[in-house]
Amino acid sequence: MSSAWLLPEHIADVLPVEARRIEELRRKLLDRAHAYGYELIAPPMLEHLDSLLSGTGSELDLRTFKLVDQLSGRMLGLRADTTIQAARIDAHLLNREGTTRLCYCGPVLHTRPSAPYATREPLQFGAEVFGHDGLEADLEVLELAIDCLQGAGVATPVLDLADARILRGVLAGVPVEGQVLTQIVEALSRKDAAGLAERSAAMPGATREALAALLALYGGDDVLAAARERLPARPLVQEAIQQLDWLGSHLQATHPGVRLGFDLSDMSGYAYYSGPRFAVYGTGATDALARGGRYDEVGAAFGRNRPAAGFSLDLKALAAIGAAAPASAAILAPWGEDPALRAAVRALRDAGEIVVATMPGHAVEAAGFHCDRELVQAAGRWLVQARALQPV
Image (cartoon, rainbow, N blue to C red; front, side):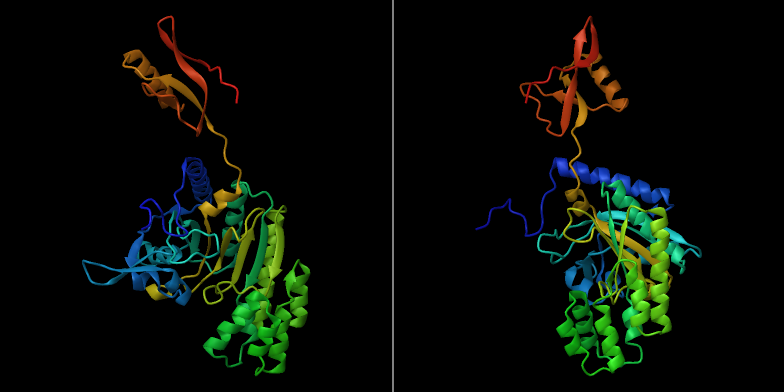
């Protein structure tokens, strides 16, 4: 018999110090998005399943918890990602003609963890811009992602840029079954040369050579020059390379401290992204801290196929790599019924001070606070004075 206090695997309580760090990051990131002109939305945790999975493919389907609505009998889902909900809100509730910028921050649930030690309940922060098909939107969400990570203490972000259109251009005109395409995408993502050669053996020689070349096209700025020489001179391929070059150069102009790289064999989200995509890494993280890019088909299922670009990140993972914030300075006060004491405590709290009252018969237990001052009575008045702290 299992203990009643045990939680499911990859689900954990967030304790005070970590919760405070996460909440501080949430406020900071939402304020940063607000400074860019993004409006906050709060979609529901639960939706009809067909709406949550609109146009997302099988991967999100497998990660979504499902249940039956006792009122309607329809299948419901607990959201595993908020992007689709933002697209639905843009398409049907706001229905604006111009550019719409939306941001959000809330929990999502996954049936299985995305990595061996990942949580199944990420706290997802994200930002989406709808309605503009130019690279200006891609650059804006990329800069916002970098600004958010740097504001959270990621001193030297490492940015990887890629584009799903490169593979589509390489395979243009070559009939490929869906299962074979999936295997090719997986082999490229794993940089599995033998697997890639096996899956592409029946393809034309030029296509096989281009696929093999993709495996070596990762690194710095020289990657794009090599790609122009080694990949087919097809419009889709060359446009993707040119746009990656534009994004990289513009980002480095405004964020020179970011380490920039390109990985043209990275097929993460191949079926989802429609243009440039990015992943941002940081010291201490085992996986990308933020992922995003362009996904122009996201609103098609809602009858309004608007251009879209955005990114998301897990605030819990971001908080885990940063240094814990120091305990907040606080004032220690005795508990009492003296009206003057209670008025003094209220006045201090109204002024923005943290006042921790000592309950009768108990010592102070406030590990998240540094009570460096205390409220004492002197000459008939309640005054704040420095507190003599016990040596550690």
